[in-house]
Image 1 (cartoon, rainbow, N blue to C red):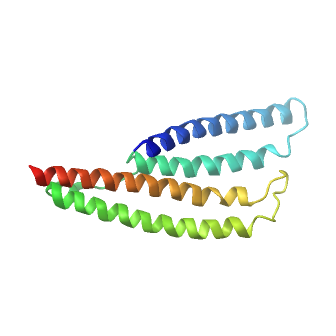
Image 2 (image 1 turned 135 degrees about the vertical axis):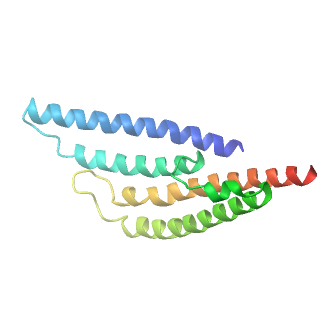
Image 3 (image 1 turned 60 degrees about the horizontal axis):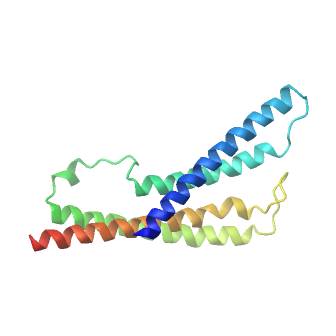
Length: 159
């Protein structure tokens, strides 16, 4: 699925950029505060916003790459077909959770459109917008996983 691999590459580069931004902001804040005795009042808020986006994008990529902690002892004991069917059920549950996150995240984003951040000239919607964005990414990754599991099941039945 080219959409999923393109989304993965975009998320990779965006996370790298966000990490570099956080590092640069914290470094600039230290230099300005202790060398020039003139702290940057907006850097902490921007670094926090970048960290929130980085965390949510990391969650979505961790979901795609299966790098979250999982106890798969009993699942690994199952034959291929039940294991794949259980995987489809798990991914379906993840999609349902993410649909809730999209709904409530979008509601929070809309409700905070007119609430400005303290030091940045941005709306607090920028903080909450990452919830539906990250959830949609996880939904796409879960759909790709379901596609792979169904292909595995089809290939297994032909054998």
